[in-house]
Image (cartoon, rainbow, N blue to C red):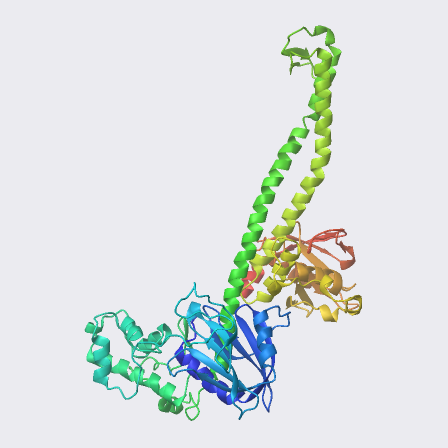
Length: 609
């Protein structure tokens, strides 16, 4: 994920001043520990401004409304308490070449500024700080003590000071080619390193873009560059400065990130750079104005990138927690199985005791074992004896062991069954997690909430459990309808136009099986294999033919642990024969009156490829 650099901040603040100034601050919502959303009302409409101090994605831009979830963070509440009702009168960089954005608030657009909300976009040191008119820090996203930083502590009640000024040269359009080249060629290093270290406002992504435009290898030493390459790079450099000076930007994806400068020319046009004039001639711009807006572009880019990062982190956290728990349960299961195996010796102890009681007359003092003939097999059996006990006492000892092992078997059997059910549940969850794609973050968050509610993960405000028990008050719970609970599950269509619903997780599985399923629908699931619940939706009087049933069975097989198999047995029954046992975990059901259909997940794999 590409961090927002100076060029991005210049473009964003320019657009925000046009779109959001002046605007009244009405709401502040913090969606996570790195992001707040400001609701701004202009004369035309309401807008949400996102501010993030995430270490890899610090930025600000207009965005969609934040998710509807409780805000339990004090930082946003303090901002709302102090600044709500004030007007946003300016969004500016504190210095033209510094990555600190100053959001200024006043009672009215023409009044003196009363509040400053500073967003410092500085990688892992990024921060958001609310400062009053006297320059005192009222609150900060990250408090920095004097022990953490002697140079610049950030604490409530202290004086706010801007970050230390940068020492590199300031880029300028007035700088001549010779002066610019002499500065870069002074130290014989790679050209990409010299571009980064000699000027302010230059980021790795910008260097990558400029080198791509001028068709230069960034690892090439400055001493080895030809004059024509220097001239091409200088042209790209001036083009970047012109974009900043005229506030004209051309956002587009590029390699591993994005760029706001014009793209390099297509193949076959040499090293020509698509300047604003050439872009208009080629129909790529309208009177030098960028399209789309940098705010919209950044919103889409960072939403996608942060979503992918959040998905990967949460996916790893959940998978690791499940694997750790399964490992513990496997050990416990093996211990119970071993103890249950020992309990099978109970009858052997009784047989030995009976045999010994029938031959008391053969016992002699001090015997450590006795050899007797078994009643049933007529084979010789060697029975170990305790020499300190007589024959009858040894027999009683065997009877006691027999009773103990019988009691152990009765006690271990339900414990073993509970462990095996828990293993089956976690394997079901693990299968659901493994089938999710990066675009399904909300479904993964539901799984995380489910595991938190079941006690496998710690509960956090960010992932509050989403279940029926969360409804506040009996009235809301009783008034809930099926339409209000329609899950965001997979939906497909059979050849005859019937819908197939596939749960993404146990929350959705329970919902479609017990709340959504109608009396005419059909319920499918991979037989004795963890996987999704599948519902073939049928209107009243409709009959699904073999083609529809096969399609639904294919989806049940594909969204199961046996996805890679050629054929998978799939059970099919009507929803009224699907039951949830008392105390069963989410997604765990039993069924009756089923018939078997052989699902073919390979058919769906071919379609999706």
